[in-house]
Length: 265
Ligand code: CAA
Image 1 (tube, rainbow, N blue to C red):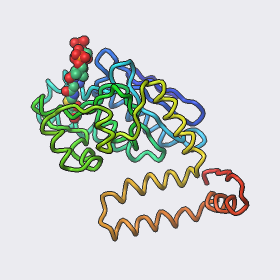
Image 2 (cartoon, protein in one colour; image 1 turned 180 degrees about the vertical axis):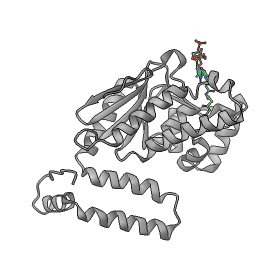
Image 3 (cartoon, rainbow, N blue to C red; image 1 turned 180 degrees about the horizontal axis):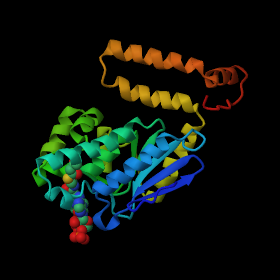
């Protein structure tokens, strides 16, 4: 990769990447260094062609935590200006994740609290083990979420459930997360979860890469627009794909009752 990372582990199987947050002794808490490393890695894969990267799974090292939040020891020493810089750094990295052209699955294998829950929210969808716990416990520290939690949680589960979660700081189970629409699927073990996350990615990889990238971009972008602007954006994304060979191949393959061979151009 040309980069040495201390707090994240990377693995690649063909075009599927897995990023593991690797500070298990601190329950994978996000300090400035972890965020910097994640940012560097995301910039690297954002420049890759589809032949090198079609998808990313994010998980946490060890049996206990996905990510137990921003590093509270680091927060403890911040003044107002430092806190703004820290929040902006986390928000920037998570926004880069959100805007990555390939799909990203959060595989949540334990605590996903505070910044960890916000990291999962910045991914495209969330798989979880039955023992996973989600929450935005910042008010118990005298804080509020600062890596996009107030913004993305309301978009994920609605503003009323978000108020209850954020004001109380209480944790919820993966099952409850599923009822709220935060979690897509729950698995007994993290091994099973990883197998199913990979299977889902492999399935998505059979689709047109440009189409998946456009679908991700369009779904994410139109969400915050008014309906006229949103529909215009959709029509524009839809029509742009007609410049690609993949549209010809996909439609022609259907007509000829065969499987399409997409080239990502
Ligand atoms: N930051 C720094 N260290 C953390 C941490 C965090 N967010 N969460 C856990 N750790 C460390 C603990 O300090 C402990 O380290 P030591 O062994 O050196 O003492 C180690 O990880 C193991 O943790 P516990 O002993 O606490 O494990 P537990 O099983 O008793 O409890 C837990 C697990 C309920 C997740 C508990 O660790 C906890 O409540 N963690 C903090 C969760 C939290 O408040 N997160 C929000 C952070 S603020 C934030 O994220 C702001 C934002 O939006 C940007």
